[in-house]
Length: 309
Image (cartoon, rainbow, N blue to C red; front, side):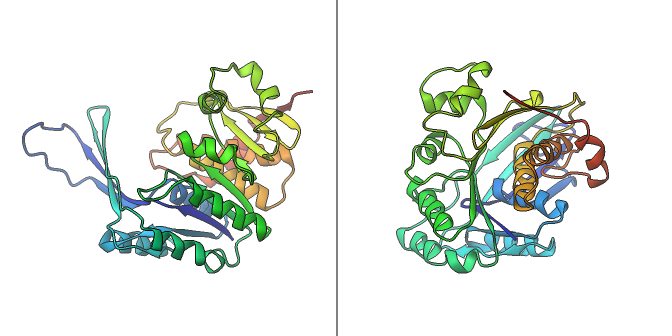
């Protein structure tokens, strides 16, 4: 099983409107509501690939209950820690070819609630060979929270990945105990180094400090694929051109593919192709974090992976 941790999950609500009437009433019956957050999205794709995802993080109030119930209806295991605060809503209003988002901050996590989560990690991760941490930190937590989860994973022989950004990503990359996998983009690599970088530099940069001791680094290049480090080998992953329908969630889908393949001990090239295929399939559907498995083999064969010599 694969545990995916979303520290600040949400109930994602999407309204499809013909027109948004500003300062007036807008009615719609086209509403989609589901448990959301980056780690939860990773779990959706893992389930479609045939894995058994386990979800954790912090939930509170009626919205927290909704997240647990929604995941369990989908056949996912939910092992969240309850908090006093209320889980957030994230609202997307899709109108006239535009998307307007309203993102709530979510609850503030107390020191006692953080301690409860960390003390429960053995039980939360029971039966899981992989721990994935996705998304930003809620109020009340610092990057030390993620660092402690990574150390727990390492101490208990569990593979651990982190998909975050900003200062938290910098802290993970520069930590004494590093994750096994990260998935930054080109800009975030430059932010860590404090300068703008060129794509041609990446193959050398990823083999140097502070990146060299992270086994897997997937640097997303959007429609151009990815540059991927595995140990001391660097690969260029090239994806075919497609007419994208909805790119939202493709990064989480790509990460799910990588974790699934790594957990299955697939060869490097096949693991990279699985990752890229999942990200590509996601952009071909309107639904976020969804892949059509009947198209998997077709697009898997279209992914080209070349090792830099």
